[in-house]
Image (cartoon, rainbow, N blue to C red; front, top):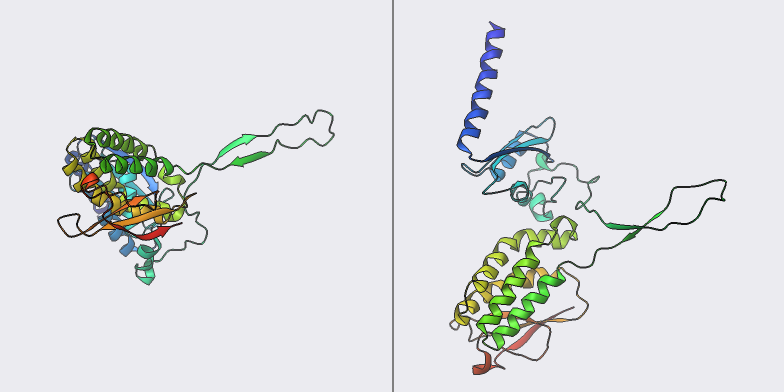
Length: 290
């Protein structure tokens, strides 16, 4: 009787898994480690990662391994792990923001002491010396070369969009927004500093959406509508990213139909991207970011 019960359970699990795969088209399955403690963690992790008919997460409380099944044409592993990280749970690829982790119940606050904040793969160069005459030859040392700030290209293209809107040049703004999208798409999130990484996860979807809207039109008015929200998210990002020179956060109370709007500038002098030559100097510096 016990044997029959075990067989029935196995069949039920198999049918459940088969049903999940049947609902998800273009199904791809991967296994990754996600840190957690208990059955409550299991529910939270799976709820954060699941998307109806797009992604299914099955996390094992004993092994800490999660099976991800997803539609490879609609999402990917990174997107699923980012949602889980924002829910408070680390993986080997994405670190949960501290505030998300701190909100977890006490029983769910897994040990993070031994974890590296973000998985990095720094570039290295080999320093080779002639040890042929040395009796005690040792392994050739490696010297780490730090990656340059890969967000610099993102900020530089944002400023180029701003400059085009100051001139009310929709064609150039569109072209610079296309370059901005390219810069966004090549950022390797896992190599960002922890603070940058956490903010990047939060703003990535929105800055891509705004950049796409600006790139897809030559209408400066429509571009300015999206430049407003693009600037808000860029502000959050530049606040945690060390810059070589100061950045000025500026504000015009008349923009956005009188609601006011901000923008970032490398210049202290106000050059309004929302009105251009109509009211070029309308606005003020509200914060200097160093």
